[in-house]
Structures are given as C-alpha cells and as structure tokens.
Length: 153
Image (cartoon, rainbow, N blue to C red; front, top):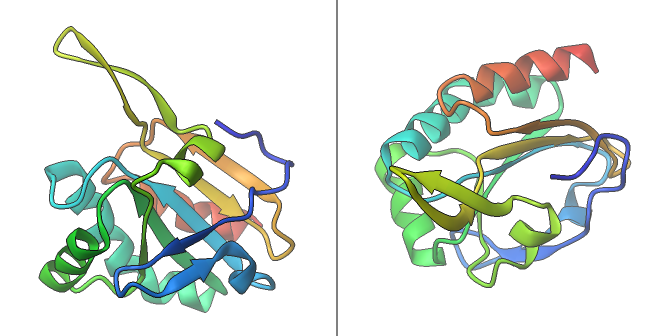
C-alpha cells in the first residue's frame, strides 16, 4: 500500500465504456480511487452502491470517484447498468495499476492463501498527492469514511 504524502502513480486505463481515462485528466479535482476485488460480488456491490448513494455529496465537495478492479470493460458495463452506478469504473486486467498502488497482496480465505486485490481506497488531492490511504477497508463503511475524509481536507 502506498503512503500518505507520496505522489499518486499516473495511469491510463479503459473505463466501462471502453474510453481511455488517465489520472492526469482529473488534475485540479480531488479523486477517491478505490480498488475492489470483483464486480457483482456481495461486498463489492455494497461498496459500489454506497458510493453511488453518496455520489452527489462527493461531487458537492469537488471530488470524483474512480473504482478499479481486474474485471473486463464488459463486466464493468454490466455492473454499472445493473446498479445505476454514476461514477467511472476502470478495467485493469494486466494488474499494472493494481500493483503500482500496492493492493495486489497475499490474502487468506478459509485457510487458503492466494494473491488478490485487497480492498483499498486512496484520497488524492488536486495536485496528485495521496493525502489519505485506507487499507483493508470494510465495503459498506468505506464510502462514508471517504466522505468524512473529504470534510477533513
């Protein structure tokens, strides 16, 4: 996981519509960059829907929300449409950004150890600096936690 105070690694990934999006596109805005394991799973759906519910408040505070997972563009599109998600989902099947942000880690589930995305959320300021980093977040609580973090900044 990356530390607060360091520059957020730049990236370009396709969104749920297949359009290329770069972190640099959001310079001048605060960015909530959240990494999650998989579209359509219980925890990830709770997290995405809670971000969607609070999205107007994030926008009022001048922030955008970007979700990143290994899922395909097509999977992200289905996820967006099924739950009416108003924010951008980025596809990183090659794990380039996931690894750059330090969220590809060893995980243990039911005694089995595998590599996977650890649910992590970063708040990046208008200048591209990570100002808050939250690792191993609780899916349902994370969006409210990020709204609070925006209020602190």
